[in-house]
Image (cartoon, rainbow, N blue to C red; front, top):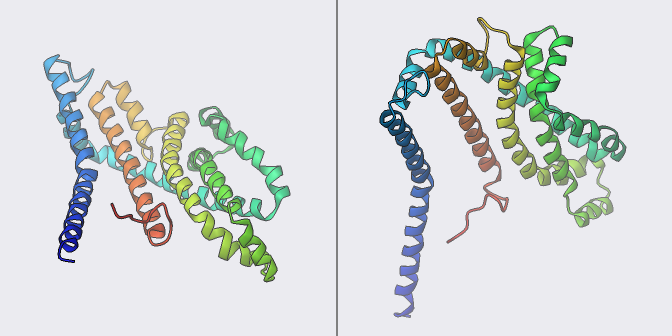
Length: 280
């Protein structure tokens, strides 16, 4: 016993050190990579004496972001509102249709091909038609963003609902469970990880859909989003402001993905294999 106990303690210490190294590397490595890329960008601009109207240095972009935030901030708010509203409608519509498909095979055969057609058709080709038939600009933007974000949620949730163990389905039937009870206690918990995977994809796509829709709508002035500010800055050859707006869009996408990843972790970390922590 006196020879085994020290070895076990040494293994535990090594595993604890490995876990600490992994935890630090998970945050430090991406931050270091981004810092090196920004430094490389800055050096390329300085060494080649590139003028700011062709490629601004990262410091100038940061300065423009702060200086022009009274213009870019309200535009970001408009784009964010459209993005979140489209994501919410996509969740309601996608989950609702997926549940309908799981309850009725005939409904799935009738409507699923239409969802596929909407997904594979580029939104830039549908958007002009939408803005012809829809008078309200906000509703048109919302429809375009929804079209992009809707299908991943529908597809993933449908897959999750159909992935229920057949033996458990038969067991529910044997015990006389109603269709609603089978859906609530068996199919929906099984589909939750699939739905959350689709939600993370849809979060980024809804932002892309909102920006693309703003480009197609082409309207400006007060109440316009970041896409209009990018177009306006391009017309004025204000390249630093274009980069600042792009940085805002990228940061917004990262924040949306981080929030949805946190939601996924909170909902799955206690029971699902994909989120359970394993000993090294």
